[in-house]
Image (cartoon, rainbow, N blue to C red; front, side, top):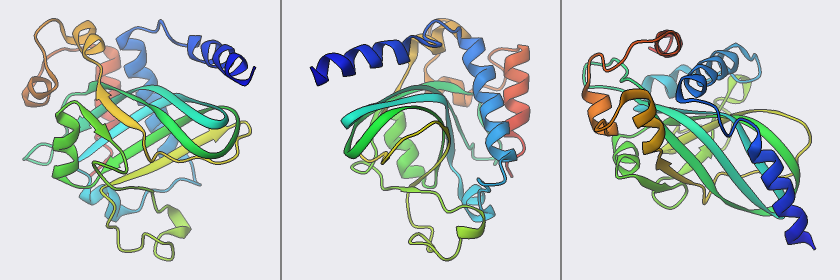
Length: 220
């Protein structure tokens, strides 16, 4: 019975936004990123942004569970280039099961900040399991920075979340990141792999793209 209820709840939750276009998802990622930066409770320390090698934004990621949790979300990722500028975005997916005492259904915005080139390269190889292929930790934020368990800023990936609703227990350990080639094709056309998108100077122009790049340019 639990499995049936879980399946029904997951299907309903995932149906929201399932048919959004690549342009719509890019604009949603842009708005999510700007909202996270404006949130006084989620102030990313300068040290984290200064070391950032890549950033992934997952708007309205679904987390639903009945003691064993599941995650599903579409996101957008950019990589810091050798000259310090940010690449054009490509699409990624977040999935996996969380283990722990969890109960509820929740949509949350997730920001991932990759701190090492090695972690970025593992992601570029298409499939990456957080906690196994790269160490992951809840990002130090605002007043908590400097007195938490991650004061040495040694994690390879930091995560920041903005949530609404009720939920008990959350972890990104074991979550899997992979490329979403279909969304890349929709936005850029056939033949544009993530590596080519990163290397490209101007693959496509649109309102959503300009808005997203402007939001990301706030990071120095």
